[in-house]
Image (cartoon, rainbow, N blue to C red; front, side, top):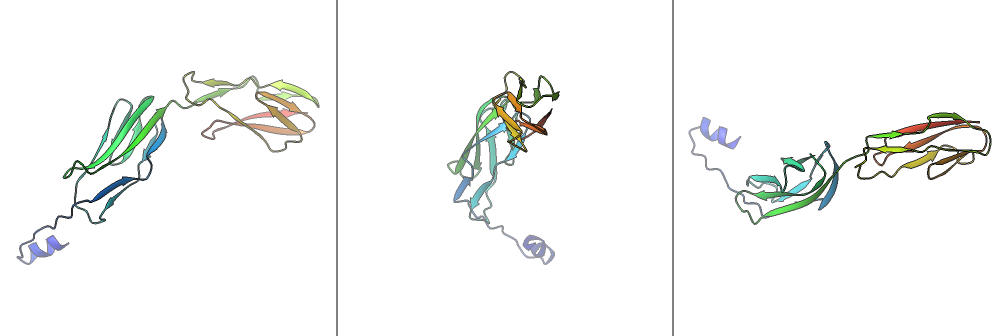
Length: 178
């Protein structure tokens, strides 16, 4: 606005330079799935700085970055750096681990009739084989009806679903019926 006012009124305008004195990143390390994006929150002081910020990735084949938005490309670890163009010693970094997420869970059955105290092995198969974290979480709305031990489900009485969650909380359901 000041420059426009000066130009409209025949006044010479001189832009004020306010050099950055500190750059920081709120997270020193993070995990990111292939194909996912996250924004790295950063702070620059003083707030009215005029420096140009430059973002870079130590390996663009693993992750790219544009204006703080990081995108996972393939499995690996990179360092994301933000620095001042005017003062290259002023910078902050974040280590990013890019991982292959679980994309599919297959169960030996999704609906099975069981009698009280019967057991059934859900035998979950997690894909792809190179998924970073294949750990599954089992949950039942009523633990007195369904008991879970690793991949095994016991139905004591009643009709209750068992929910199986990937680490990113995508839900798969197995319905056991007495």
